[in-house]
Image (cartoon, rainbow, N blue to C red; front, top):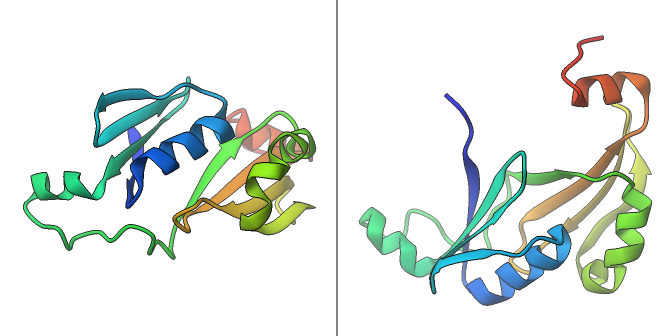
Length: 137
């Protein structure tokens, strides 16, 4: 089994795709007006409108803007540089400014326009760098 993507259901798909395009600095691929993907070498972020839920047989299995259990995490080369590049976009959504975490990452935590948590992180300790590279220490 291989994780293919994470999908966000958006009340305002255009706003969400535009936001993630700016955050990730990657052009989205729109398959329909209700579904887009932003592909990176390691993972894909899929964004679907609430209209896509009808294809699963129900409108009420997921509700946009109510995620309180997940964090979408992105590795970045330098959290502080990413913060400087994105600060004007994410300032209203910041939960935690760049901070060194006990597990060895420097992290920036903020929300997207529909309240999903996003963590940008850079490993800063040898153990965290090794974990990112798949080396167990």
